[in-house]
Image (cartoon, rainbow, N blue to C red):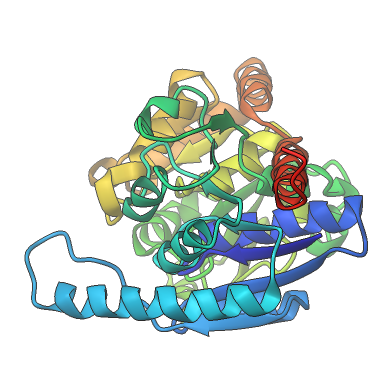
Length: 377
């Protein structure tokens, strides 16, 4: 079986694709992959590290307002379709998988024109523009949030799959997480993270909250600043009129996030769909601060879905400060009944078999396509 993966721009599009590849490889070790990404996205560093052969397209997204740049974007899209067709005809995949981002557009559309089976995965509760466009052409649309199937009225087939990143993280070892943090196993850990590059608003609230952390000496706080803000955060702590508490662990980035997540009793984070899939796959309560700087405000929609089911507390940025953040954290950590209840509800929302569900669908699509080519259907 030969599979083309495409998705890019952010880790939220890339990691689900790699999780699908990991599952397919586990099921059938001799499978072959090709990943097609954009020239400027994070996939340029993340995918080559996975060992999957990698090709790029020069593609950008549409502006939502009228702009002359959109004419250039259309031309890039058409050139991208041509370049994708050449890559697909050379690799000859049995199926093509798109996990979001602008680069998916020309790749998946080219696959459709070549009559190659296709599947797109939508991570968010509100679909992106690219997946909305592609949904009428693909063989299957897979959604992360049950109840959002109606967002794709022109799709041929829609399935609730969850987010495949959940499968990868569900297997994480909590004991290894404690070891990586240098903490005794069973230490209460609160993980505060704003993504790989960090979130300024969360960092500011966290730094304001540091004096309050001293009131919870039995709880260890792992504060992941993001690489962009690490030096600034360390400098602010050094210049503060108080001594940095010993139960605060400040890091720029966590290389093995699944293990650290598995060791955490509470997570404070943005509300990106892939990260929420990881959190719910492990059944971790969350305090969510949705980013207001995303298309269609989809992070708040993601966060509210967890809040409505009792798995998270949501704080919007205008209400976020050290006082409100500490109050939310303390409310969960100090109330064992609330903490365990949120964890149970989070776990019910998780779908740790997501990658297996998608892998099974891809195998069905590939088998059916092969049968059609052989004249058996």
